[in-house]
Each structure stands twice: as structure tokens, then as C-alpha cells.
Length: 162
Image 1 (cartoon, rainbow, N blue to C red):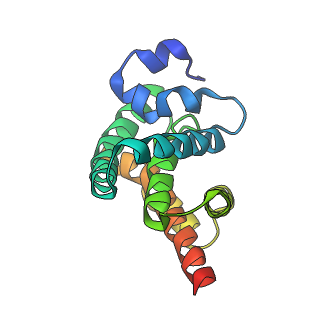
Image 2: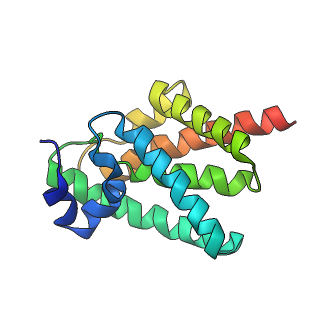
């Protein structure tokens, strides 16, 4: 079942997990969710301090874990492509940690993150296969591979800056 607008709006967990609708795209929902995260982060920077953004990210990790758990169970799919909150939070972490960064640095971070998330080399593939199933374990598994992809992205950026 491909979720639609009715599913998106039927539960707050669905709205969160599907990235406010960005995960409904039939074409590259993870990329669209990451682009939504980029835009949302730009808006957050206008209104919140770095510490407030960090706090929001921390809360978003736990809320996202819950939302991904609930939404995957309602869709009856272990890791639905429409769930993009994992990309959203992971990319927020990247942008928060590389700030201040100009457009080109953010674009490079976007490209690196999408590479690691889509190709799933080494540690990302390991994390992707670590937790499967429904319930809290499965929800954590949905989030984990994107957090590892973010860590790999940050490692490449740190090595490049060094």
C-alpha cells in the first residue's frame, strides 16, 4: 500500500514519519525528505539558537523513533520508503554540526549523505541489517542506518577539512 494524503493526516505519527508529506513522493522520497529537511533547517536557523536547534534535534530523535515505529506498523511494512523522518533528523544533525556552512558546503553534505544513504556502503549496510521487525526495535532500525550514514558523511567532511 502506498500511503496517500488520507493516511498522512490520519495520525500525528504518520505526519511526522512521512516528513510532513515529503515521503509521499513516488520518485525518490528519501531525497525529497532530505531536501525538506534542508529547507526546514534553514528556517530553524532564522528563529532558533544553535543550542535550541540541538535540543530540537534531540527531541526529534525520540519522537521520530516513536513515529517511525507506529507508522511502519500501520503500513505493515518493516521499513517503508515513504518514512523519511530518519533522513530528516540525520540531515539536521549534519547541518547543525557543520554550521556555519555556505551553500556549496551544504550541497556537498547533501550529496555525501544521499550517497551513503542510498548506496549503503560498509557500516551503513551493517546498521541497516541490524534491527528488523515491528515494535520499538524495528523503529530504531529504521532510524539507525541514516544516523550511521550521517556519521559517515561527517567523517568525510572532517577528513576533507583536515
